Amino acid sequence: MGDCGAYSYIQADSPPVSNTEIIEYYAQGGFTHGVSVDHINTQQNDSWDDSRRCPSEISSRTEFTHKSAIEFIKLCRKNNVSFQPIGVIQSWGPRSAAGYARELVGNGYAYIGLGGLTMHSTSRIYDIVSEVRSKIPDDVCIHLFGFSRLGSLEAFNGLNITSFDSTSPLIQAFKDDVNNYFSEHEHYTAIRIPQVIETSVKKRIQSGILNQEDVQRAENAVLSAVRKYAQREICLSKALENLQTYEDLLFSSRDYSEAYARTLSERPWEKCDCRVCKEVGVEVIIFRGFNRNKRRGFHNLNYSYQQLKKERDTMT
Image (cartoon, rainbow, N blue to C red; front, side, top):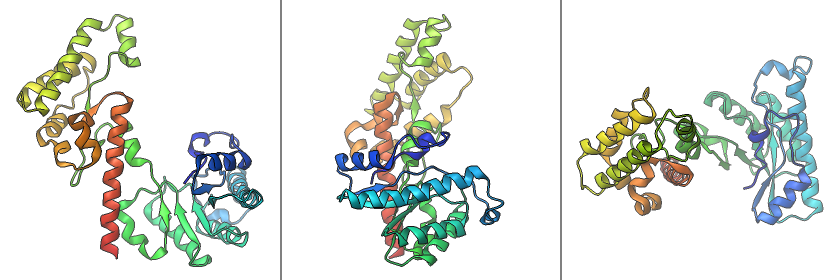
């Protein structure tokens, strides 16, 4: 499924891409499903069902998205595309979402997507999806954008949702300070060992706050210690001692020692059978550089997918 990455231009007055351009992109990329160009609205207020009360910024975004979806399916027909068109709905509440959904289905959509839901409560999302589903035929597919409520799937079971997506497992690998490695029973804290070439470290070296040789020496020592610990060549306390030395050098006000001790002592990478953990071992729990963090993100995605399968099995 391809979309236009609407969150990347949420602050802009209008999307930077047209339906014509995005259709060409989907065709060239070989996508099986393509999403119309939308403009995200994250605000909800049922009183805006009275058009006189709806702020112009809200109505302009939702109306733009609706008209764009209608244009999109017309262009898809004209170009005889091989992918299935998905019309996006941005709304301010259940009634507005259902109204837009009914119109998109009337214009020929067999697959619609509900956007702008990420920041709202599970109960609010349920109300919106429930209202939409009640106003369209059962065979029309519904996709939920940015839906990461795996623990709440059972509540949505009767609403006939076809698909949903979420970047949360991937993003947490990069941006969450603590819960950035997913596992079966609880999450772990990946061990931060910044590279000397990272901007924040390099600036402090250039300003004279840090000595480059001291940092490189400590960096090499802590990497070696963590790897040796993983191979059972040194004890946990020795690995933690090297970690603390590096932490004290770079982050004097930060203390993740308890979280790091738990991660290393429980060795979650050894208990995971995903391809990433099997191939790279302890490297997956080292928070360092784009590629390592990306691999941990793929581990998290795999974990989330396995959880999804388990949830589905319990509901069938």
